Image 1 (cartoon, rainbow, N blue to C red):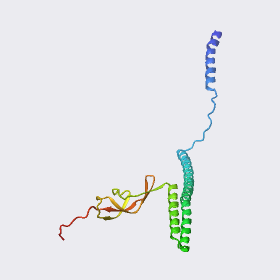
Image 2 (cartoon, rainbow, N blue to C red):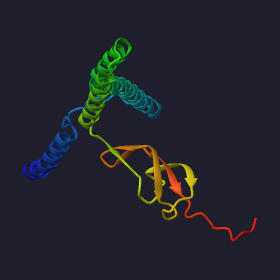
Image 3 (cartoon, rainbow, N blue to C red):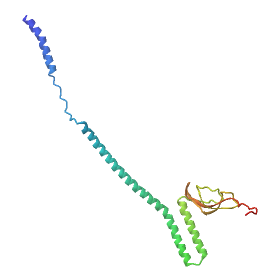
Image 4 (cartoon, one colour):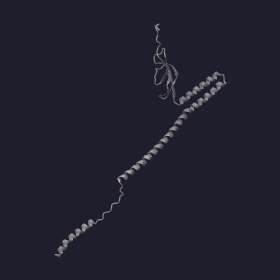
Length: 193
């Protein structure tokens, strides 16, 4: 009987040992994480966004300065390329003026003026500037600047005189032609005043 009691006690002992073993299993402690309050997290995010914003503003200011310098350099280069041909023409004009003062030779003065005109035309051609005449064309306010109307045998709104020619670069108008536009034929009076 004793033996039976031991057998009966044994299973109970094993289950107590098993239960104790499971209860005493050591669970690895979780690493301690510093917990921040929601306010601290939001403050940190706000500080990061402020820093990003400051860097972005600094980058934009640097970009504006760089573009401004590049634009100034481009304008200066454009001015240089535009004025250079005209400096030569101005030199010829000064020589012609001096020759006109020192000489009574009208033929030489005329030749000098023709040379200046050719040089001006060459300078305009190098820049891609073309001139256009308007006499005989129908008046177009996008290309012509009417300075007067006068009666003529030409149809109404036809250009009969030109004071200055117009200029273009490609299709872009630089200066409209200054013109006199026909207002039609003069009305005849039948003797009435």
